[in-house]
Length: 325
Image 1: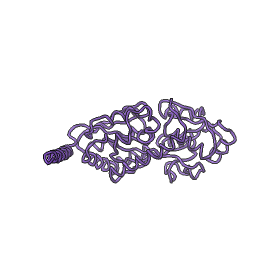
Image 2: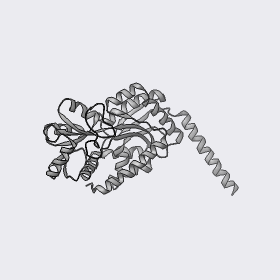
Image 3: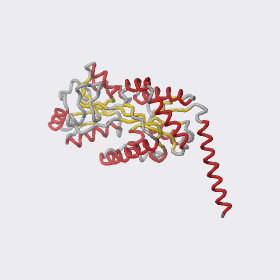
Image 4: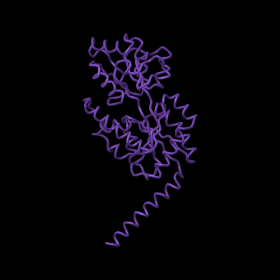
């Protein structure tokens, strides 16, 4: 028994020593920062300046790698099954790392909350409820009144079934006792914005970075914004609560690694992420993309936040009745 215990203790000491040795040399080769969506989108606009600054801090290249498809599940699966050594990192968000666990439970080969762990949070990207200029209602109250008088006649741009905007719109319908019709468009925000400008769809949810220029150019009108405070980019536009609509969600982003990644490596990545987010030049670029930087104090704090979000959205999604084909 003593020999067995001694061997177990020795194995534990060797494992701990190996982790510490790995952390002391990490990183000594390029890190891949995997983005679950195509180049040019909101996630990509956040990933690139963060990666560029992190590589200066870590002294090793941080290369952005876009792996779009299947609502982010291709990237989720790829990172979750990567070697847990800190060299493969995911820029996840509320859809991929909180919603998909429930929405895609039958098709996902992993469980995000179990197979990935948070390194740290990046921040929030507010959403704007926009409307076609051809749509008569201009305010939240007018939208609700129109919806009650015309059940099913308001249609909205849907970037994907079981996406964040989909569940936000379902929540808006339930809170305000109205019925709307989703109109799915593939290909990201571009086709949706085109359809909104043309009046093919009445309303839609855009991230603030995509919405501002269209609103300021008079091509779309803003009805409400997500969050607790109005946005400086859109003075005079009320929050969803102020507009009488209830609430709208802001998307969040964070970095994730395979669960078995050693804690010292996670800590080093977290420190580099927060140091990058503190740089004025990074903050400026992310602000132009519409992001509000909100770093986490520790990886554990980020992990708790994501766990709470996964639970919250799981309940909303199950109650929504949305089924994937």
